Image 1 (cartoon, rainbow, N blue to C red):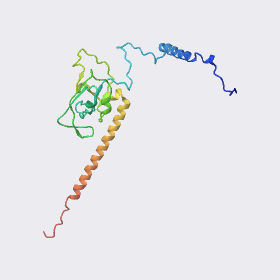
Image 2: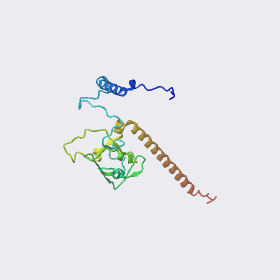
Image 3: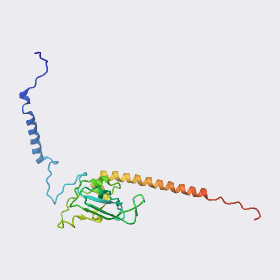
Length: 217
């Protein structure tokens, strides 16, 4: 048989090479956990706490703008989150009247908005389906209570958090949302201004011209 000249594998050198590399990586991580600041994750809880990462999520909260949690609430009670919630832990009742939203358009608002966090599975589907950026995921995890039922059933006042809280825990997403909402508001204001000017011109054009007064009248 002709020899192709290709190098032959050195079985003796390859034997156990993967095991040695794996053991070396294990040893590196083991000893590194004692000296590396990134690996020293143990803290003296509850006196010390590790800051939550931006993508962390626990349970939903309702975002409001301004200082008035009721008047500034973004939720318009469309009930999409209630319908899409897998464990059915959201309960909403729509208001009878309306209030202006962030662009000044009259919208309904939730007369009742309850979330049973003892049932919530933190899936974030409510956040993904909300078209008004009204519900987001909080990072708060210390929610233990002696009241199993009433203590874990949160109404809209307990769920309400200012937009500044949203910026604090999810700054990247909050900035993107604010930019988009500001653009939509500016577009709506420009459209309203253009419509008002068009109506003013139409009213001026339809107004009859003054008739000349005859001499000696």
